[in-house]
Image (cartoon, rainbow, N blue to C red; front, side):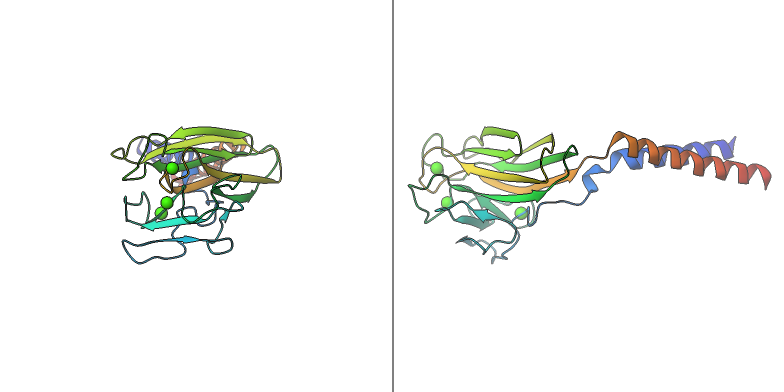
Length: 214
Ligand SMILES: [Ca+2]
Ligand SMILES: [Ca+2]
Ligand SMILES: [Ca+2]
């Protein structure tokens, strides 16, 4: 009876482990939390192309990164403000992107945290869009007193490179939504989950046999 309980525990642990850990899969987004470049506490700066690891501003845009100033980071010390600073107000798009290497037909969980700019000046300051591959959605990060919100969506890749992008919408007044903790992780396929479960069952059965024959 005790041996059976131990074996059952092994099975459950193995299955739970294989099902419950997708969040621990490697983040395919480089610098998803905007922790690079490092900033002194309570300071902010804006950056051009090639200055922020992983991220590229759209032509005419910059990438503004703030370290716990006009809002606290959701993760780490830094976050990005989409309606950045010192950009070309006539640019086609204000925002930034990152191209992710993906596998056609494979599922990916795309997630990020978003929040409103403190001291926002007009309604619509915190509007933005997020897209990843075929997914594209507009968001309103709310009012200046609202906190961080989390969003996640599973998408199936249709290309070997999938663009992840955030665009600032609404007034171009340098005040807009904040983004942090951007993540893209592979979703385990049902087959591999079952496969891992089967490995666990085989291992548990082996442990049970060993106990019974010892
Ligand atoms: Ca961060
Ligand atoms: Ca700004
Ligand atoms: Ca704005």
